[in-house]
Structures are given as structure tokens and as C-alpha cells.
Amino acid sequence: MNIPILMYHKILPQRDNTDLTITCDQFKKQMQHLKKSGYNTILLSELIDFIHKKISLPQKSIIITFDDAFSNIIEYAKPVLDDLNFKAVVFVVYNAIDKYNLWDIKKNIEKSNCMSKGELKYLLMSGWEIGSHGLNHLDLTSLTSFQIKNEVKKSKEKLENLLRTGIKSFCYPYGRYNEKIIKEIKKAGYGCACAVESDNFFTTDNLYKLRRIFIKPKDSLFTFKRKISPWYLYYRSLRRR
Ligand SMILES: [Zn+2]
Image 1 (spheres, rainbow, N blue to C red):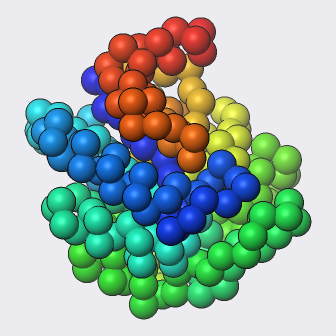
Image 2: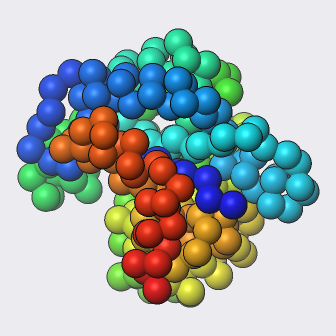
Image 3: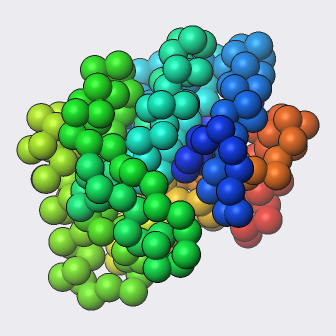
């Protein structure tokens, strides 16, 4: 099955000079388009249950993900999604909870607040899913086996303790992964992991290499529609072969 999985980072009133910020206006139009087209948002945990337990999914399913758990998602994205009865998945960097995007500062990207424990709990109570994005947002392919285990397993345990809920999904920082990392993800007990690029034919072929659609600030509504279309998903699967 080819379920589109959208990747967002920040939603803010104004654009900045990065690829990470979508304006509120743009986001609202994109979400309204999804609603009008009959899409239903599902969580990654539902995708896992569909694959393993054959628990059925709505006809036109789509997954919305937000990397890095920025507070601006609660302020600007959540009200839009609430209005449309949509839900989403947020990937948290454990050591950045209630702090900011330390990993971006080194790259001269603007400082943004990351969600607090209270904000994460609020999302869970609203029916959203929280996944792990590691302890420190490190490129896992540059780490030793011990460090990988630490980032993958410890972040799951710490998040589960903090939020008192099972953490089923992981998101590779910078979309970087390899077979050794996938092994650790499985060993830690995650049911799936999100990448950006993958050699999956269908998005659901391998739950540990979930390909996502990077929605960029320069995307017009027309481009957005094209990016979620079945033929675009098919085209991207061919491009990676
Ligand atoms: Zn990230």
C-alpha cells in the first residue's frame, strides 16, 4: 500500500531562510485540501497494527509527521488540524525537551523552542502520537555501536518513563540510517522508523525504512497536490532503484 507520509518541521506566520518552515497560511491550505479530497489522518501505530494485525485502515489514509517537536506546532499547526479533525505524529529529541534546537544552532539556523513535558502530554491526550528522534539529534551513521544503542534504546525508555506511554516509532535524525542502525531499532522494540529516502517500492513495504514526503516552503498548492498523488509516490519509488 502506498500511504503518503508527510514530513514537516516548523509552522510559523512567516517564512525564514531555511527549508524547514512552512507558513500558517500555506499549511492551512494544504490541510484543507486533504480534507476536501477525503483523506483521513492515521498514526504510525495504526500503520503498524495494519501491517501486523491486519486491523483495517480508512480508505484514503495519510500520515502527518512533525520532526523535532517544536512548540510552534502546538501554537500554529494543532488548531488547524483540530478544526479538521486531523491528528499527527511528533518526533521528540529527548534532551531538547523544554529546551531548544541546539543541533541547528551550529548550522546557523534560528533558535526555536522545543515542547515541554506538559505540551507532549497534552498532544497525547488529544490523540496524537509521540515518537523518538533520539537523545541528541545525532547522525546515527557517524556513531559507534554503543552510542547508537544509547540514542535509540535510551531515548525510548526515557520517553516512556516521562510520558507513561509506549513509544512505538522512531525517526532517523537527518534521515540517515543503515542496516546496523535498523537492527538496533528493532532490538529496542520499535515497530517502525521514518526516513526521508528509502528503497521501498510501496511506502509500507518495510516499516523500518518509511519514505516520507518533504513538504518545502517553495511548494505551491499545485506542487503539494502532485507530491501526495499516487503517481508521484510511484515515481519516487522508481527513482530510488
Ligand atoms: Zn530532526
